[in-house]
Length: 282
Image (cartoon, rainbow, N blue to C red; front, side, top):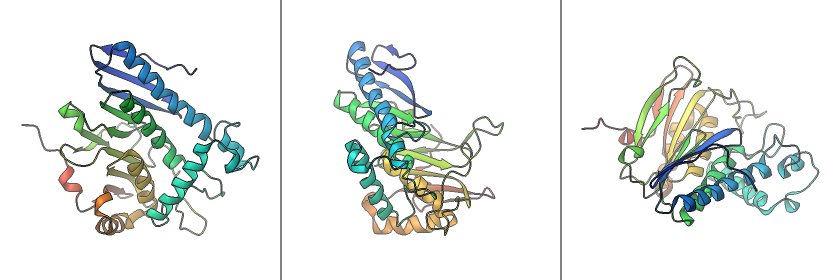
């Protein structure tokens, strides 16, 4: 059984827990109608899903099914069924983003990391919901998910970081979006500040690194959509805002909002993003 790393602090119905997995931190905050013991059990189950995803999809673990697939030692059919599920999901997202999201690296390796972290986070969130916990936030390595029954008014406000490393002296909050009374529940950010040029342009001749933007933040209904579109928009570069505005016109039911920052520090946003800027509290 996987042990939960870190301490869980339960005070009455409030809970807070940080789980280290996939090379990042998953932080849960919320209020639970369950007992302390039941809440801890539910959190334990949710976190096991994160570790299970890491064991399956990590390309840093030599014996993971995905590492073995990358070396040609196995096939998708012989991998655990969730590998096929993610493979199919990546293909669908490639179609949805008109090819701007691709799970195949320039070396032709299947690398679904642009989707797996938030897919696993979503599984953990669904596990909490199934256990009866529906009032919480989840910070999945900087990508934010809000539950529908979130009771803390301030928790509906999500800060977007400046496009620099958190260790930089200029690190801080760029802006804050308020998702109160909207259909949006997730914010995801892709950029080069922490990991360098790790997002490639799938439409470039050699799938060279995308380098026109330094950061893209996406607001969407669900966490996977926000994450995938953040990667796709970063790959699109300076065309991202126009292309996503057009996508939103064609797909109003699944529209997203995007804030992009280019190499010169200029900000651009989709047509509805301004409505999401948080207003000063009265």
